[in-house]
Image (cartoon, rainbow, N blue to C red; front, side):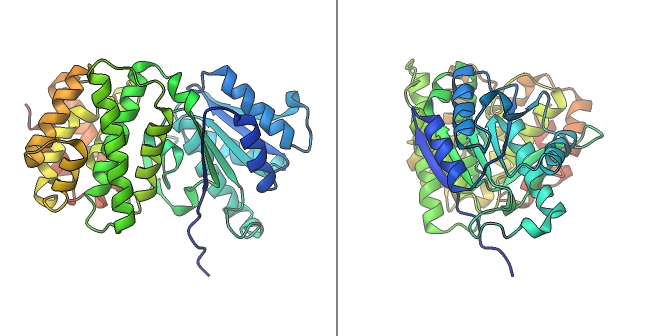
Length: 376
């Protein structure tokens, strides 16, 4: 019998992370959690609250004895196997992922693999996965950790994207303080990422009316935050709004994203860029939108309305490029310094992304080469 889709519990808060986490662990009957974090989890105050909540719900309330696993590099198979091994050998019955995409994706993949190793646990809970996963993201980027997708590096250094409903966490806790503590560039890139996710979700050919409404609302919220930043405001108190926009986009995304997301990720990985996810979105936005425009006529009016612009695909691209330039982001591929060899490598790498099948138009390696080399 096929399991029904998981409906995660979602919390938005600006205080009391320890209390909410404790309540979620107790609800999920997790007594021996494994806490996984990464290098992006730089706020010791919030991490301390996370530990407080976990220790209060744990069978062993001594905070110093909590099991913590730290990921030092990009999410990869080595980390996922190490997490799954600790779940098995230490008898851990749940995971708390605190931090960015590296910690969250590693935990999602490890939890799914552990369920395959221990099939007798698959029906432990009727409304959740066999190993409960609670996500506490430090950024709204990438759907605030709610997307049913991961990006994992293999043992050869190549990255692969996977999509599975088993990757949906049991609970999501968005604390607006993590957003207000972000570096301004990180915050801008996260907001751009939310905008792109919502646009690519809307561009899908099949989208239910509720999902469409959520994606439009997410796009409107995130775009207004970016416009306020470009006008000189610092919306550091808008954590709930941007997390809500990210969650709206993730909930609406019932099939996958598109070539903007995939291509930006491939550039990040090829260049080993220190920039946050979302930094390259504006640079790839124009050529990908030009490629997708013939298949997006029906949704253009909704995107224009949410972004308060006009002119179809060209008008949307011009609006995005103008705002991105004001915020100091690259707006053209030529600004990234990619030589011909790098563009060929990126086209080859991105052609295997699962997002290519959910892009408005089917995009293949030759299409990516044309997109990347069109400015040469």
